Length: 112
Image (cartoon, rainbow, N blue to C red; front, side, top):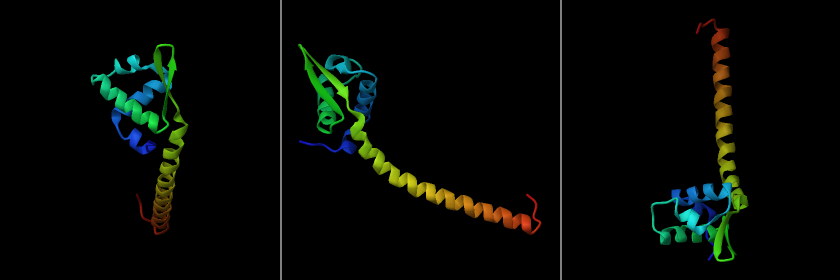
């Protein structure tokens, strides 16, 4: 089952797991030791992260290591960029409006 990247990062525990794995790949035991939830809960979080493509779990001997694959976050970045552009345009328009008001006030001799 393929999961949505947005669903994967919606949970604060999964975001924290990603932050840990960005620094370095960790075995599953190392990941679970950082949380006060059951091992089964962490496995579920890792499964969702894996199904969304944000984490790859690799077998190395008897250990399973988790590695972050942050390339998938580009989808989130593109989604955010559309709103960033929207707000930049709105703020630029507000700045232009305020500049015009200020210039108009100076033209009519009003003091600040």
